[in-house]
Image 1: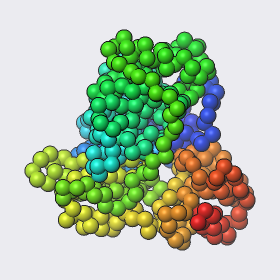
Image 2: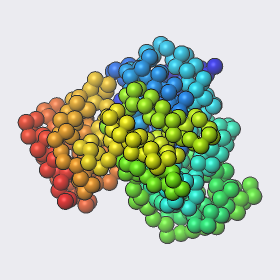
Image 3: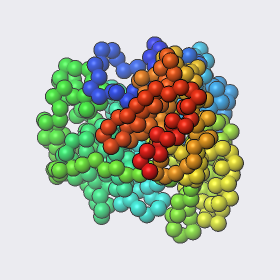
Length: 453
């Protein structure tokens, strides 16, 4: 049975703060996991790694039941497509571990915090990518759990698998694999530098792991304490040649590619995703990234009902996304609208007309001691009165200046302080901000979100 460890109180445990470039690491990595719980003001928090966001329906049912019986009744989706349980009793970690182990969510207790793998959530579903990256995800996870070195990675180190559409490649991962046209090769990138290497597609997962192990070697030789590739004290000038040499020694041919830029692909919009051959997928978002246990049960039941309805695997499949959504693949097209109505009735975001679209928030009170306000409750009032529109700027509500969980790119920052909120528009390389009285907050947020229309 996996053993439980505990960590001292850090922050709310939802996500790293927005201002996290080259931080000073004066202590060990306290990133929470399923066995290393984080102590928050609303109880203990567990973060369960879900490589590539892939769950089967029995696992989803098990997590929903665990949230209802042991936590606050919610399952949070993180910006890496992982899942969090809050409001746990920190003294019942062994019971939690047993439940997760029984659901086959802990294949290696020593590696459970380093299984951070994001992937294109529509890969293999809509014909837009160059390859289905799910086999890469399964193989990379298997190799990670076998690697002694990989167990020393930080819980923040991230792998991204992009099927060629550019969505996962824009998530600032430490190691990225991108499927290339023709399906015979993949592009391997380390960090966000302008260089990469073309490697055979069948060797892509092994190459990604070797890049992570090479990073650990560079960290050890530098004598510094860093957790991400971007934090290497001497940059990546010597990293690519070293990695190329190690790939060659393992029999993996690699060709250097220069002049790379970071793509800006779009996340799956809510609604029906046509998959051809009479099949489709459903894409939904969780308001503020939170699923109730009842909503997760509903998603799992729908996956069981429709996935492989021709008599194949009845376990169903759910794909958690880094944009705090869920994709259900494999539905017969004739049943898609009925399934979408079920999820809409369950309170999920199912189309672009939802006022919750583009609204995110940190944990806030009562879960985080640093927060000045209950930002989730405060965010609900302007969201309910904001007309939806695809051109609206996203808005992120933060309980303090740390801005945990803030999305990348242009955004309206609503930040709580001791005396109220400040609304700031971060767009087109500039920032415009002003304090706003509570009585004017809803109007100010709605106006700020519409500034680029």
